Amino acid sequence: MKFATILSALAAATLVSAGKFHELDIKDQDKVVTGGFIIEYQDNVSHNAARNALNSRKIDYKVRNEYNIFNGAAITVRSEHNGKDIAALPGVKNVWPITLYSVPKPQLSKTKPTDPEAASLHHMTGVDVIHKKYKLTGKGIKIGVIDTGIDYKHPGFAAKGAAEGCFARYGKNCRVKFGWDFVGDAYTGANTPIPDSDPMDCQGHGSHVAGIIGADATNIKSGAKPPQPFIGVAPEVTLGAYRVFGCKGSAGDDVILAAMELAFNDGMD
Image (tube, rainbow, N blue to C red):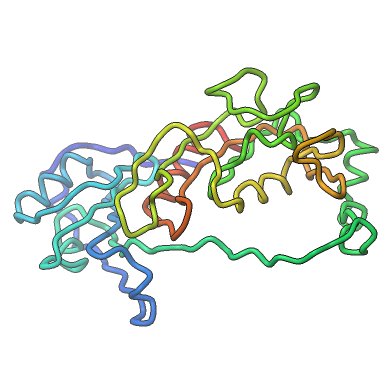
């Protein structure tokens, strides 16, 4: 993937054509952050040049995120300004409203170990052959989970010989080696994120996804021992936990975009 070099010449930015504002359907208006926009700059426009353009039009704004791989930023403006005003600024290529996404709601059901749906599907997908015949278990591969975080202490994410899992920032020999909490527990999508360094899951969806990818719950002796032992598709994969949801509510795609950029910089495969 090639990324355009960012130059910081505002003079060059004034020569480009007006940008495009991508409006959402009316039915989707309740799924946006009020006054929030993601801006894509022209290839030759820097963050400083874009801020100068906003200031020159006396637009009252707050920067939510600035990106480097994607040449742009996310901002919040006062209600008297809209996406079309921003798209008309020199150096702007595209403008989108910040859209909110919800965590899929879990469908709960009771399953006994003898029920057919409790059986592993690896024999149907060929994963068991990959494990046994080719000895491929994900070792050396890094997978980022952009979701509600990961319960990295769960023994299903423990390294071999360890009783429970850990996060590399707080321990050694951890399978969850990368990650960041972009939002904080109280974030709902409607308020301001409060990031921190701990991507611990408080909803469960991200842990569920990470478990499908790479948990190993075949040898748990106590505590979180599942009724039916199971193993993920790549039980030796290295995980990255990029938390974009709080304990309830939604996540803005400005936060998701920031998580994607960090996952790329961390070398996720």
